[in-house]
Image (cartoon, rainbow over all chains, first blue to last red; front, top):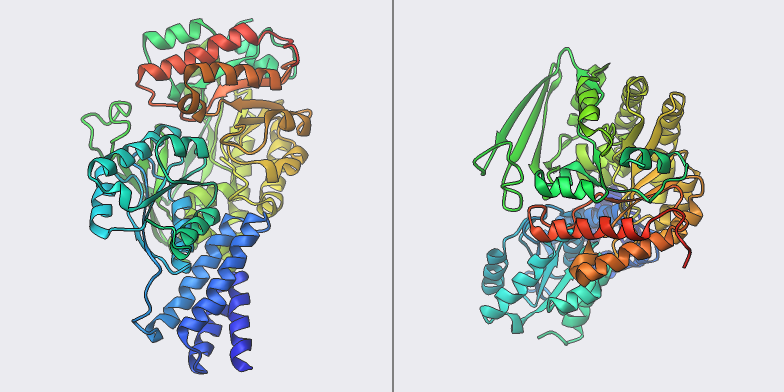
Length: 217
Length: 371
C-alpha cells in the first residue's frame, strides 16, 4: 500500500514538474525498499508519458516539458546509485544539430525524453559537421540517428550527412529521423530520411516504435 | 509611389499603389545586385541604428572576441563556417556576470552562455540593469535615414521585451523553465526591474525621430505559452504602446514563430503591426486566418524560407502570388524577407529575392483581386 502511494506521489510530482516533490518521493522510494527500476518505469516514465500527451494535446508547452524532464533527472540522481547495473538500455541513439545551426532547444528536449524512455543517447551538440556525424555513427553504431535544423539554409546539411553515411556504407544499419520547425515530411523523404518528427514527443514515439516494436534495422 | 511612401502607407492603413516588398539590409549583400534589386522594387529595412545610448556609473563591460576569419568586420566572408565568439563580462561592485555569443548564420549574435547561471547572478544582473541610464543618441539614426532616402525605412529596434529578454538572452530556456517554477521571487524581481528600466528606455525612444519602433521579441507559442504571454507580455506591450502612441509612433513586434495558440491574445494587444508573421509550412497560422483575426492591425508577413528548397523558383513565384491573394485586396499588408532564405552570398539567393520582388510588382497592384 505504501509502495503504491509513493509511486503515485512520484508520478504526480513528475507530471507537475515539482523537483522537490520528485526528490522527496524518490528518497522515500529508496527508504521503503521500492526497486529503483520499478520507481523509474512505473512512476517516472509513466509520468513523462502523460507529460508528453499533455504537450501533444496543447495543454503543456515546451518549458513544461523541460521542467518535467529536469525533475526526472533530479529523481534519477537519487535512484541511480541503487539501480542494478544489469538493467540494459533499450537502444542507442546519436543526436545533433547540423552544421551552421546553433539551436539546441528542440534537440535537447528530444534527448531528455529519449533518456526518460530508457535510451542511451549520444549528444553531439550543435553546429555538428557532417564528418562528425559519420564518425559518431561508425563509433557508436546507434539504432537511430536524429538530426535537427531550425535555420532553412542549414537544412541541406541533413541530406549531406545521409549521403556521406551511404558512401561510408553505414546508412543501411540505422534509421534516420529529422526534425525542426522549417522541415516537412516531404523534405525528409526527399533527402532520404526514414522519418520526419513534427515535434519532440512524436519523434521519441517513433524511436520507441522502431525499437520496442522490433522494426529497427 | 516611392518605396518609403509605399511602406508608410501600408503601415498607416492608407492605400499603397503596390503591396510593399522588403528585405532587412543585413540580409542583403552589398553591390550591384543590391542596386538592381532596389530598382525592381525591393525596399530596404534598416534596424541597426539605435536612437538611444546607455550609460552606467559603476558597471564596466569587458569584451573579448575570437575570430577564425581574417577580418573581424567581414562577417559575410566567414558566414557559415565561422567560429566568431564574443564574451562580455559585466563587472559591478556586487560581483561579475559573463555571457558568450557566437555570430549565427544570419549575422545575428546567438547566445551560447547566459549571464544568469546561478541564483546569485540575479543580484548582479539586477545591479547592472539598475544602473542603466538611457539618453538620446540620434545622430547615426538620422544619418542612416538620409542615406536610405526613399529606398526604404530606418526603424528603431531596441532590446527584446523583459520576458523574452530573460528567456532568450539572460537565462536560456532551461534555467528559465526551472526558475519560473522554483525561484519565482528572484524571477519576478528581475522581471519587474527590467520592465521599469525598459519603460524608461521607451520614453527616450518616444522623443526620438523614429516613426516606427520594432520590438524584436521572436515569439513562438510553443515556448512562450498563452499563459506566459497573457501574464507578462501583454501588460508590458500595453504600457509600451501607451508611451509610444502618445508620440504617434507605429509599434511593431517581430512574431515569427508558431502563433496559432496565441492568435486571440495577439488580437487583444494594442500592437499596430505584426511583423515577420510566417505562414505555414514554418508557422502554423495561415495568412487569411491571421488577417481575419487581427483586424485593425497591419501584417508584415515573412516569406516562408523553405519554399525555395521544396519547390524552386517556380514555387517561390507561386507562393508569392498565393500570399498576395490571401491578403487581397492588400490593405495594411506588406511582404518581407525577415529570416534566412538561403546563403546570402550565393547567386540563387539573389534570384529568390528578385523572383519575390518581380512577382509582387506584377501581381501586387492595389487593390488585388480576390481569388
